[in-house]
Structure formats: structure tokens, C-alpha cells
Length: 248
Ligand code: MF3
Ligand code: CO
Image 1 (spheres, rainbow, N blue to C red):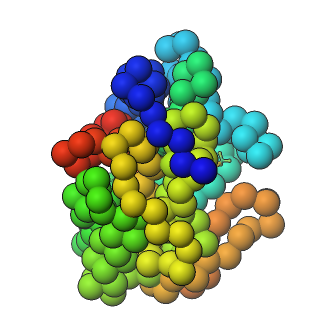
Image 2 (cartoon, protein in one colour):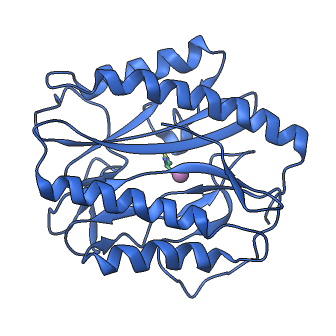
């Protein structure tokens, strides 16, 4: 069931998004060679708690951390560890905030210099996929219009699209209905209505679509080990289109 949010609830969700945006502004300065992914996780958790909120991922389905850090061929759900960031890495950071039961969710991929042309293109196209998806969001459009916007732009650039993991409703919980696939699925295709809050999150591979789950129970990698990128915003459907509630 899709739960619509009223104006007061949207303003609470916006506060949650503002904390998450502040966290990204803060943490991105720390994405440098030599920093461990566990240090990044601590920076995220501390920022969120200092702002009176709780890291939404911590404990969700027994996830052990506040942040997902997915590097290079890691697509999503990379576990913070003693691994250090290195020059040339693509570092995906995914995080969520729970502010008194109001949830936000966002992700960015950051390239650590020196950055190859291929990396610039992958990150640019993945961000464009998200931007095109957001432009497709307006009352009367449907979930598949979002999916098509992501998929067609990725494929026009020769990239793989991750299918088993999707965008989703958000706001009252980490994951709500509807699912928002990054390809036009055979599944539900609800109409977009003002008051819906969605996490839109293209996961795009430089190589093929296929992914593999690592034996740590969380990390998802590309099957062909090609690099992958992930950008995500929490957005609200409005009467005239949509509002992007998170910022990086
Ligand atoms: N960030 C993921 C999403 O966008 C959720 C992470 S689940 C967790 O839907 F368990 F890793 F926290
Ligand atoms: Co999400």
C-alpha cells in the first residue's frame, strides 16, 4: 500500500533530508586516499547523532553500519571495514536518516583523483539517469515512466542496469511501496500522486547488467567486475512535478 504524506509530514521528512544532506556535505571532504571505510562510517554516524537523529541503516535487516561504502565493482551495500580508499577509486556512499520516525535516503558516487575519462563518463551518465528520472516525475505520470527514463539513458550509453535492486517509497520507513525499478518491469505501475515520497536510485554498470552477492551477506558486485555507480535522491511528488528533498 502506498502511504501518501500530508504537508506536516512532508515538513518532518524534509528535516530528516536536511540532516542527511548536511552529512553528505561533511563526509565528502573526508573521501581521500588513506581513509578507511570504517572511519567514513563513524563520521556519518556521529554527524547524524549530533543532529538528534538516528542512522536509519544501522540494524535495518541486521545491517551492521550506518553507511554503505561500495568501491569500484561494488554496486551497493558495501560494508565499512579496515579497507582504505585509494587514488582512482569510485566510492559510493549510501546513507539514510531516521528523525523521529521520518526517513530519508540518498547516495552519491565520488571519484578520487586521478580520475579516468571512463570514470567521468560513468558518473556523469548515472547522474543524468537520476536527473532524467526526476524530470519524469509529475502527477499523472507512472512509475514506469521513471524506470524508462533511467533505463533508456543508460542503454543509449552502452551501460548495464542493475535489475534486482530498486528505488522505493520512503518517509515513514526505510522501504515502502511502491518499488521503483530502473527498468520497465512487468510489475505494478502505479500513477504518481502528490504526497508520494520516493527514493530514486539508478545503479549503473560500465559493463553488463548482471550482479553477484558476496559471501559477507551484503556486498553486491558486478558479475563482470566492471565499475558501477549509484546516485540517489529522496523526492516528493507535488501538484506541479516534484521536489528534490535531499542535496549532496
Ligand atoms: N540504501 C539502500 C536503499 O537505498 C538501503 C540500504 S539497506 C541497508 O534502499 F540495510 F543496507 F541499510
Ligand atoms: Co534507497
